[in-house]
Image (cartoon, rainbow, N blue to C red; front, top):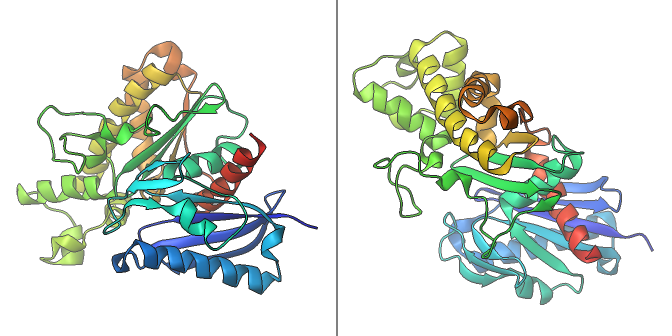
Amino acid sequence: MRKYIIGIDLGGTNIKSSIFNLKFQKIHERSDLTEAAKGPFHVLNRIVDIIQEMLSSEGIQPASILCMGMGIPGLLDPEQGLSIFSPNFPDWENIHVVNYMKNHFEFPVYIDNDVRVNLYGEWQFGAGSDYKNLILITLGTGLGSGIVNDGKVLYGTTSSAGEIGHMNMYREGRPCRCGSSGCLGRYVSAIGIVKTFTDKLEEGRSSMIMEWVGEDWTTITARMISEAYDLGDLLAIEVMHETGKILGFGLSNVINLFNPEVIIVGGGMSAAGDRLLNTVRETVEKHALKLSSRACTIVQAKLGGQAGMIGAAAYAKNKMSL
């Protein structure tokens, strides 16, 4: 009997789902709206329905599924299969995801943090393949991260190691949802770069983006800043470089601490590419320890939105072999 693995990447907007064979070749893929506002059990029921529909579509029996991996945003206990808290999901506290899935499926189910499953994807199939010391950061609404040290993913005492986005960069900085202030992710993220940009507009600076959005500055996006950068907009260039410098200082600390071979930059905002990363690299070169920085390259992720699904599947297969 042929065996398959399911990978689920649960996001605040979309549930990305795939079936893979044991060589991690994709058999089936789909994306569905999460509908997180309807509550955790609505979301879990949607996942159950999606899995059943995928299996039916491909004529695959549940007995042919070796295992399933799921990437879940927020804090969790992967050994217990418990999602403790997810900030972008209403009423999502202490949800036993694995037990819920066991009520519907007999195959083993494993969960991990969504950024870590992305890390597994890039580590095994993307920009991090063949490396034993690497770090993934994802630049989206916030700044997520995962760390591989000497060939092992770091988890820490409470499975919350590697929160690079919550390194304090400013003693009295922007408030953060974590309860602190001045966290790196409040400046280097899609929300962060837009906040920096609009703060400067409020100071009286000007930009061609103002012509695009009129008086509604709430519609300004990180993508617009990249587009204005390409058109030579001075404020967009300044903000991009300022954001890159802050990230460069943050990654200098990370390089000094973990001595990675490669830092992979993923997430939606990574589309800024070298507009952002050139300043990051220049800052790291100036401020990180020379021996460590020269041994480390900073690159864009290769797998994009596919990393979470294949990473969740790879994580589950790895758990099965332990």
